[in-house]
Image (cartoon, rainbow, N blue to C red; front, side, top):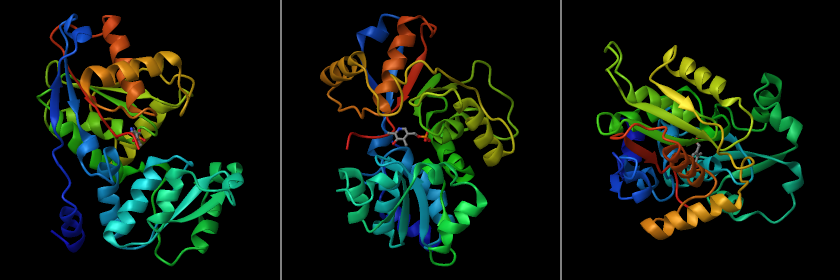
Length: 308
Ligand SMILES: *Cc1c(COP(=O)(O)O)cnc(C)c1O
């Protein structure tokens, strides 16, 4: 264990995260068993998939400053800022939307700033071009030498590799693992970890991952394939997407989604994060109603985060 791993383990992540069965008659009626994969309990300040996605990146950064990107409500920015404070490295967050500069910070960005993250607001066209080498070089010019870049949403090869463990923790215990998708990095790793290990033959009726994109657009399949290629050199595991449950797009909601989420909270006594987790659960219950899962299927819903 190197010094960084030691520092990380001192934060006492709850890993493997708990897997909790829940009784829900709406699924039991179809012969389905639901288990909640409580990644929201991994760490109070780096919850859910953000811990899994950041861990290998932060080890690679090895204490150097970290530059990363996100929207004004990005959980990834908050997690990176918190990690910087807890582990003692500098962080810069490039935030989409120069109109936000000079306005009071929203609670999410205020927390980033309180954790010591420097926030740079850039206009939308610059933000869109952030992976262009010249644009990135321009940003890095303003950073200390050796600054480590983590892409938007934290999804790169190391992040995907970090999420493999999520699949491994579920492997053998479930048949389907559902996860909400932003950039798709978590799904890419989850599917790989659920599948057979390197060199093992595919298991008959092996587990599969189901991604529920919370953004509109239909681009995510290509993203997940690209992330798996970067992380593993090719496709891994069984996965699919159901693109019907974004409810209008990122941070959009519908009365039906809100009703579903409140009802789920009342039935199961668990507060549900709305941007991602609610849409995944909503999609899962809709699919069950449609008869998408054979009786006897054990379904894990990955609770990737908690309400802030
Ligand atoms: C960031 C986040 C996601 C999306 O993860 P991706 O790897 O970008 O697909 C899902 N759920 C929650 C709660 C998140 O904060």
